[in-house]
Length: 155
Image (cartoon, rainbow, N blue to C red):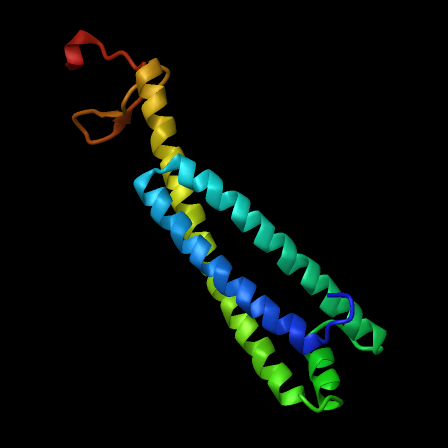
């Protein structure tokens, strides 16, 4: 897309973001069902989309800077004011921002599922390996350490 306009790049990124959103939802399903093969395939596809989105973001930044503008919302608005399709560009940029926010939120959800799974698996491994005993409570409701020995008189 070396000679693509900002609007064309943004439209293409909307398509890529919609694909990414679908992949993130598929990733959530695979995480829920613990389908590791599916997760591996999804990760490869997800990385390709993320790389393309990053390249396009860099290209948008270059286009704005080439016109002497900052690569932010104000710069985009200033650029759009000089273009015949400026209103369409702003609408597409807004749609892209919403899609990216949805991707971010759902990806964070997937990250929480991964962390929860890692925590559970870690606890189970510790119990199986005998490196962590379950926490017990004494007669006062206080926790005792796994290796804490009580005298027989307090039993």
